[in-house]
Image (tube, rainbow, N blue to C red; front, side, top):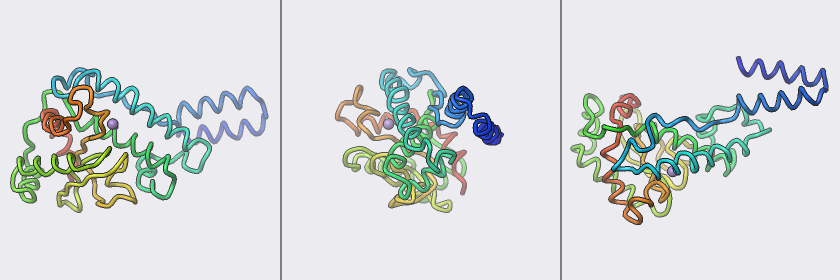
Length: 231
Ligand code: MN
């Protein structure tokens, strides 16, 4: 519907050749079409003491915003301008490094905020619990392997729990790559992700990434993870 409206306005621009209508149309287009940072689904301080308020503020308002701004810049005026974030991410390797890094950054962080929740943690139940036990033996066995993958990621990146046709796999990606990308070494449908960039934990945990990974389990939104799991 918005696309149709914009096409209409575009036509209007050509016919009128009126500077004001062009400015109006471009502003409107930017407003409707550009990607935006989704609001956090909880307060900045809601994940304390496991993830602190200041980290959440900077991470969400500055880092995520920068990915979104740079993504919008990278696609403005190109054939990729009207594509969904999923489409951009899936073809990231063949589009451009800017879309790979910033489109990945936008998708990954949007997914990350939803993966966390206050008063959460604990353990999953139902089919997800069964699938975890089947592959990793137990929830603790799974956490150990997930943490090891996060600790083992040299430099910046992510660790994921993904589903390959219903079978769970742990996978780690560099920078802002994710398992949906054409360039991913282990492709899967992610159901949980943990950001292991230093900006995700340095203020509270400094160089102690293992401590951050241990704390992460106290704020995992298993309800959301289970929703994403399609066995
Ligand atoms: Mn991050």
